[in-house]
Length: 592
Image (tube, rainbow, N blue to C red; front, side, top):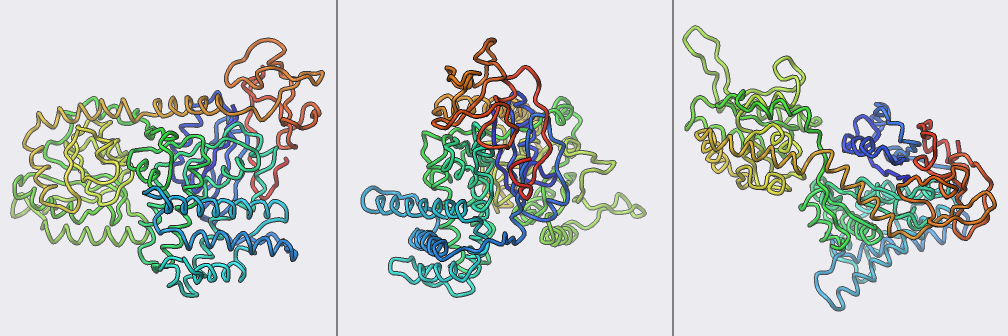
């Protein structure tokens, strides 16, 4: 099977988000071939390069979202008119959509209106894609005055929601720039029969812009689409746009909601990484019949030693491990630890993690200052040097070479976040067999089940009471830690993740109409098309057999990869192994 893996700011870049998960998936499914289509978010991502790729990755195509590009395309009068019509329809769909998502909660006229607006958005989106395919790219048009004026007319039109009507010119310019960046995949040359059209399945590793190439591959070439989300883009928009004006927030929320609804409608299967993400997907219109929860796969091997020797932990030490940022609410944790110290004077707290950007560095400095105020340095005697019971550390040093060593250093792991998706750090602590105390946010309860204590967020007293209860009860700590390790090994390992996706790939292909016909040397069609996963000796699986698009002319034999709509049989159906091809960037074109 040949998979088109669609990523945004992730695999195969070294610093990409979710890159490790994608790498484990690709390496675990070595019986399949993968073509990676990657959208990069920053110049730094491009500069840091790629992770080493396994041999089953046959091609990598990349395109930047961070730089303003102009392909030099000059549209004629007819093309400009088509663009104005399609972009105007898209703008009207955004302005009439209720901010926060397109899903209707009741039957009747409201539901019919929502379906009408969803169709309007889809028709406009695919109209822009067809225009880009027929006339060239759209970067200049999406940044043009025509686009801004179309947005303004839609915001002033009768029926526009109040936030849209309040949009001013700076708001419209900002929204137009954000939409241009999000719609850049429309202008890529990835949607030909020898490119994304030649894969058996598109697997988008997130929603939003990353899934847009999969939507277009389905629209132009009928390639089935699988969408995996560990965090829903609409939710991320609400969390990352707190300072924008109401007009900008509502228009972009409408866009993300409409795009999510169209993605879920066209996807063959949707795999949320947790129930928290699943609820957001249902809110955006996902059909429950398409949903399959697949928890993220994590490597348990680095944490095995700590998990098998829980007695080595310091029974008086609490550990927090993660990325230092305000959403982790370390301030509440420090205030909770002040109450813990009053109940257990020998307790210590190790905060292990590095800051996330300049804001994270400022937050870390604030937390260190607060710790110095709450906990003056303590000394064992009048001539000894004092030591603060709260330490701020990073992994990689002699004391804590790895995250496993950080978890192993304490008997109790604490999570104090106010915002959380899937708590991967908490799962790592579970692999280490540590009891946990966590705030009830995101998918925390789903991850730990009944193997840890959960308290409300922003409640230092409740957090302190739960920690003290476990510090004073070592037998309960041991029971919870053992149960947590067993749960993590059952649900959150790489093996279960890879097995789940392998089954989903086969399920999708088993009910997807054949888009290509296998021909023998005489040009006669062979039965069974291309088997999904079996090598049957005989002429049916002969590597000289050729594949043609259904309804098209008979192809010439032995085409090269990327040389047109014709492609030889996949590597797993031939006698010889498939070698990784040289990576191809978006600027080099489809053919090599």
